Image (cartoon, rainbow, N blue to C red; front, side, top):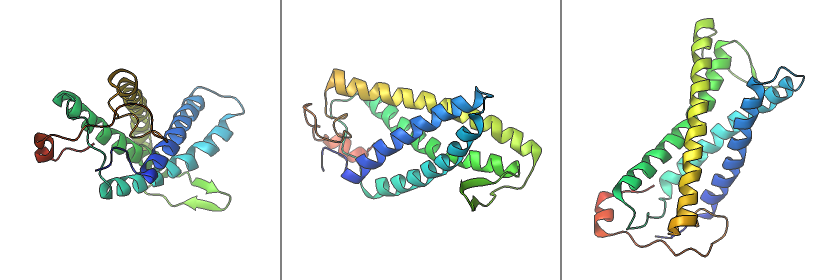
Length: 195
């Protein structure tokens, strides 16, 4: 198995990283401003969320067909488990957060405008109480997403700067000077673990 993610996987990762960070900061800007910029931020936020949803589904499909490189054989079991769970969480949030936003706007009976003349259909019935609950859920999930991204970035820096074990360079656009990933042990192969 290759020590690096495939080129399409790396491209999707970095494109989505830029889009998600932009999305989160736009979201923060939206809820903290009452200026004339609010409609512009809103007009960017909605189609960008749908774009992230589509890319997340493409990325998930690609990932299911293209397994990740193995983690280093000397990585403690706890860190392996945390890595696996954090990736599940990130994928779940990349899909759930836009869907909840879409559902929230549907419950508000508000169209999602992707482009002039191009609206998404509602996925839930108009309901003020449902809208209020989904709005609260959207906010909680956004904070959770922030926390998961910070944890993901911290783990990447730990692998790239401290352990230098090849995990970080497996996702960089180009190879770095860190040592290549070690082949998994027989125990790793039996466990079927993958990131």
